[in-house]
Image 1 (cartoon, rainbow, N blue to C red):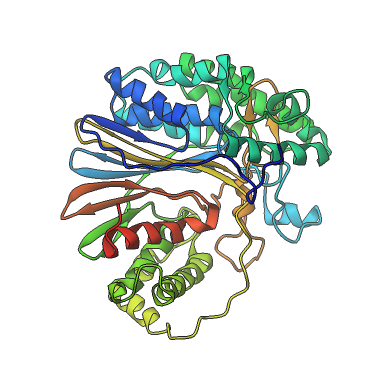
Image 2 (image 1 turned 90 degrees about the horizontal axis):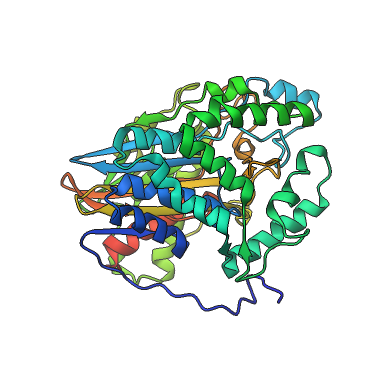
Length: 459
């Protein structure tokens, strides 16, 4: 059956779910089941989030994987913690190297846009600080899905087919691991067909047995290094061993008496906060929810926020990011004055082609996790480490080559990042996690979630 976004004969359904002793929300029922299994076994919300995360790398490899990045916001006790699990450019990658290779902008596929994958270290650091159950137990459901196989949902099958079609076109030794890993005799799995991932299972078992360090300084890291050297990549074991997650203080803004929290740059969560700050003194309720006037204000606020984000957001470890100035109330009020009855004119943005998974967990003790992980564009760079099931992301495509831009690619630098978890609180008490999927749509999606919830009273 020919599936596309205009012909999709499978019904979808979303219903509110209410629970008192724990809950997991994700894009895949088997991933949510993995998280619930861990909660039912005595794990907490962080254990459940890691179980869900690992399961999603198996169940939705079109959107995320062991070779990607991740971020999380964790409510524990009376504090909201943030963790940045994004990786940096290899030490051998620079704008000068790319220019010498003939590039005037960042390449989208192949080894060039591959940065250090951070998601596995993210799991390990979250587990070390907050986890309750052994990591091997937390990863067990994902290992089972990888070894025994799991049915492929229709939407995943659709994006999988696109990835396999692209793999048939690409040429080069770096791409040769894709089809043996992610196809069935050269084709994508069909909706409902069971897909088994032995390489993925092998990697997860190594992590369960030896901990997440094995990915960055053990057998897996050594295999990635060898494969990169053999096929023209710049990623090295030294890049992997030097990678660390970063615990960060979330940034926030007040909106309608609530506090909206995001991870600080190098991510684009600040764009959502700026847009909400612009809208905070606009009475959206005077217009119907789906009216042109309400949409106009939200869209124009988002345009202004993106203009700042694209100009200033980069790796704060390498360049100064004026976060406080960007969220300054007086400045946002001045930006609000730029919105009139006519739309500001910008060129059209590209439609999202990539892949991301967002998920959230909560336990009976009140711990909550808002988490997101991604390989950026579908299966990422198209580069797959043979025998380990690792599709390496192309997050480096988020860099620019402009010598005057703070987000210019440089060795050891983290790129502008699209994936953002959100969290809502009021008067110092948690309301809950929220998030969406969709590359540069995510700040807009966060604004829509908050506006529709707080301004228009939707669940």
